[in-house]
Image 1 (spheres, rainbow, N blue to C red):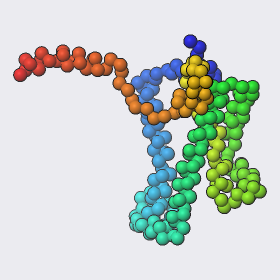
Image 2 (cartoon, rainbow, N blue to C red):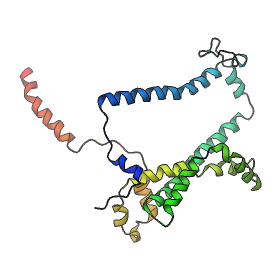
Image 3 (cartoon, rainbow, N blue to C red):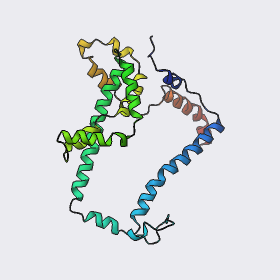
Length: 234
């Protein structure tokens, strides 16, 4: 059976090296420290929200508010446009997520399973675009949205975020690890087109963990082995 072609930096991921117990402990400690460091901004945001406005600029800052208050929350909730702000956030989050998953899945499937002339060059262009910070394209993006007349509209808010190079890269690397034999073996005339293969085989979906095939047999044999001991104790 032919094996799926992988990029050079993905070949090592197919045969991972298991770390030793000491190495696993060190990795776990490093991950714990990094996780705590990632939670510091969230804690600081929550602690600042409970701090009075006059105390937020105090030096040195207070890690734990000495006079916690809920005035900041009540001030925000009393704003007349608070409902509109929440609605806009929900529309942006749901729409951008759905469209990004769809476009990234289609582009990643084409780059991973449908090789064409210039596909590798196009993929590396996506990689290069990921190196550009968003601040570098913020002003040109605003000028484009302004000239298209989409300022202060939902389309101008959603359209620039619906295609993500990082999402395409992530989906391409995931789909590339899937076997290609099923997609090649099924005829396209019998419902096996690219959309069916993409939706049924390549698209990621939540899966339920399955027990090993012989797990139930082992459980039954263990019960039979322990049955005489139970009768003897009784």
